[in-house]
Amino acid sequence: MLTSVSATETALPPSDLRVPGPADLKAPASPKGAAPAAGVQTPQSGAARPAPASARATAQKPAPLPEPMWRSADGRARLFKGDCLEILERVPAESVDVIFADPPYFLSNGGTTCRAGKRTSVDKGTWDKSNGVEENHAFNHRWLSACQRALKPNGTMWVSGTGHVIYSVGYAMQQLGFKMLNEIVWEKPNPPPNLSCRYFTHATETLLWAAKSRKSRHVFNYDRMREMNDGKQMKTVWRLTAPGKQEKLLGRHPTQKPLALLERLLLASCPENSLVLDPFNGSGTTGVAAVTLGHSYMGIDLEQEYLDLTQARLLDAVPTLRERPALQVVR
Ligand SMILES: C[S@@+](CC[C@H](N)C(=O)[O-])C[C@H]1O[C@@H](n2cnc3c(N)ncnc32)[C@H](O)[C@@H]1O
Image 1: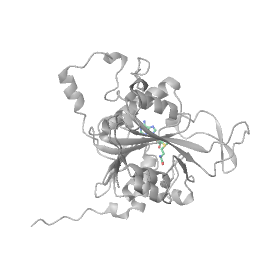
Image 2: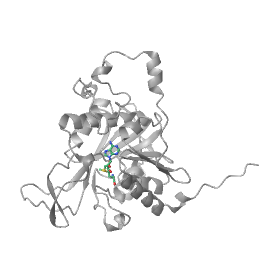
Image 3: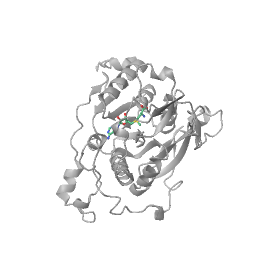
């Protein structure tokens, strides 16, 4: 059963929706120097003055999507190479049912972690380096705003993160008027030990689930979740192991999410035949889960290597993606 929840059920009081101040709207230096996302005002754009009608009409017509780097033969899966700030602007407005985003956690700044029992430096890639608190927040505000534009009126989005990024994401979502639905704690039963012995062992990540706006009537597949939880209501603590070797047979990504996590959240929130989008595609876990569950998928990533890995994972998981759909004979 699909349950639509009324707009008032979990809405925040209006006082919790602060209008962003000038500091919030500061145009960040995009990692790739992209133009500001649609709807995000910059100091230069004149925050309080509405744009002339002609300019608004132009603004509502984004350039068409670029050619995907790869598309499945049936068109159900598409992978785009580039900066999500630029590509999201070209996704048709109000066209996406569910977005999952696993953005940079801004962790790769010379620290260390434990991998396979050994101390190793945290260096996931230049995309994961911090630009300072203000710029990181401005970046989060921009891509979240672009995602919000792409979501259907009742669409929802999930964002995963640790304390390094999740508070900024939650704050930006409140600034943008998303309707906060749930905060899921993903608990890892087998986390790597903390080698310094000066902190608790990090064993959780947070997932924020939010609807496009306070008016949204979001989908929650309540019965399916209860069924998966032995007939009891599914709680907001999900205990799931990190992806094992079996999920990395086709290649490695430094921050790959477990398939079971993506399957659960898509089962919970997707209407049938959804269009699912992931602006930080990585190894394509979201795509594999989405297409396996019968949905369509758009993934965006900066790195060719990760898009190649995604293509391989998708074709391995759903071999029919190689086939063109049979033509129907109309009599
Ligand atoms: C945290 S990882 C996502 C991992 C993914 N959830 C998985 O299961 O494999 C973030 C990904 O976003 C990509 N990325 C970072 N900044 C980006 C940007 N501005 N536009 C598009 N992709 C970006 C990185 O290359 C990286 O693969």
